[in-house]
Length: 158
Image (tube, rainbow, N blue to C red; front, side):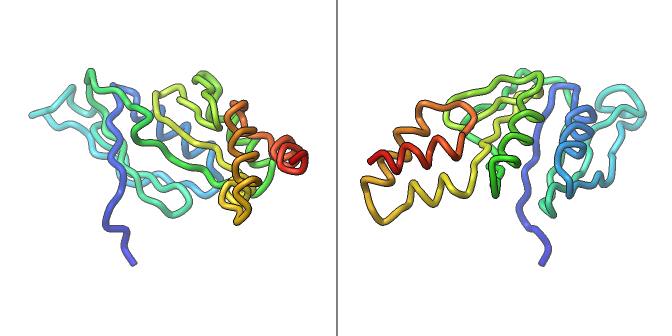
C-alpha cells in the first residue's frame, strides 16, 4: 500500500546535507528524486528545492528554502530500539553536533527532534503493575540517553 501521508521537513538551506546525514545513519535508507529550481526560481537556478528520501520504508520530503521557521518538540521522530546497542548507536549518531535532551530526546544538528526509545522502556512503562510502570517512569526522567540496565535495576529495586 502506498504511504498516503508523509512528513515534509522544511530546512533552512541545508536539506541536502540533512538527507545525506539521515541516509547515512539509518541502515534501510534511500534517496529519491531531487527537484531543482528553474530559471523562474524560487532560489538560484539549479539549487535543490526538495529531496525525497526513505527511512525504513517511510517516505519523507526535505524542503530547502531560507526560513525563520524552526523545528520544535511538538513533532518528533521515535526510533524504536531493540537493545542498548541500538540505543547507543542512534544516540551517538543523532546527537553528534546536536543537543541531547532528557528522557531519550535529541535535537539533531539540523534542529529535528528524535526520541531514542528502547522497546523495553515502553514494556516497563505499560506494565500491568502500576508500581513497575511508575518506577520505570521515575528512572527514565533522570536520564538523557535511556539506559536499559538502569531501568531494570530501578524496577527491581521496588
